[in-house]
Image (cartoon, rainbow, N blue to C red):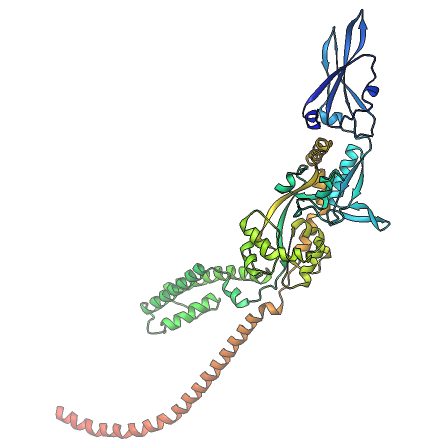
Length: 522
């Protein structure tokens, strides 16, 4: 009988009463996950069987002693009594067996903490903490092994596997302690434990220089339709003010043409006080202008301040299409046709030249050194390594996808069911959540990712130049008006003398002519 058939069913064997189970199974290896039952009579009366005991037998591994669990009995008086506990409870203790596990050191998941003869012998980190909790629950010991090539595990051109996956396939180890993303190729040769962590695999680049175009920010607080509506409202108020003065009772006392009304309405929007209005329609128009100005100014000021304090960046690309067109960034493979082109054109040359970084930390630090470089990694890796990265890093919005991570185990492992059960129990009881919070504290992430922002002179230099230009234009206009007024004064000092000389003779002539005209009338 093959192993697969033994594992897939439940087996029952009847043995003689006098036969010892240890002797019968001395040279027979019954793996940990087999359900093998032995029915053996315990007493006879006048040649008839009075009681039969049902015993489950198995071995934790090939070197361990035979384990026996009584799961039921049968007798003439009571019949069949079946008091078997669930499978995971009957197999909850591994009796200190040594399980070989492969891992690839990669902070913050696996960190080397102790060395012996220049070889790491103790580890810490998120994945190791989970595995140590499983080790305590299941009562086993671990022998760690690091793959010589330091890889997670990929299929070579000759069909073999390297890295941690290769060690499991060749049965050198039983479980992979590192966290692996699910791929179709890996699932064909290894089994995955229940999901441990959900993360976002994204392209990361060095944070570009923040935008300093303050002139654009002047118009950015309001959208184009809102600016259009505001201008239309201002024009309507100008026309209304002109109409109230033109058709009012004080038409001849003040000059409220279109030009004058434009300046008065603009002053109202700027909260400037005009001359006292005596007509009620004019006052009503001014109240409307003031209320509109207050509302628009408050909304504009609040939004404009946010535009100055919130930093914005111009990313070189926002998706994989842009990454492909840029040509200076590297990514991994995928079944998608676009991702295959990205891999062939961008990543394959670096893979062949051995230029890819060996760890996430090395790749993220390279972003701070090389100007045109990107790195594909998990967002959980970035959060866990931010303290060791000297520059700010951002991810690309649409060049990413969500993936689930978990440990892998050999398809032939006898402990798969027990590992899966305890991992689910750790999730249900909140232990996994607690380990996630220890590794990636929420408040720490906020401090690292969102530092305080200070508005500098560089950010408002364009506004200062605009203000200086306005002051300069006002001074020039003032000088021109003074010169024009001086010229008008000089003209008035000359013109009255000429007019007086011309006016006096004409007046005398009129006096001589007037009596004659009077006499003619009389």
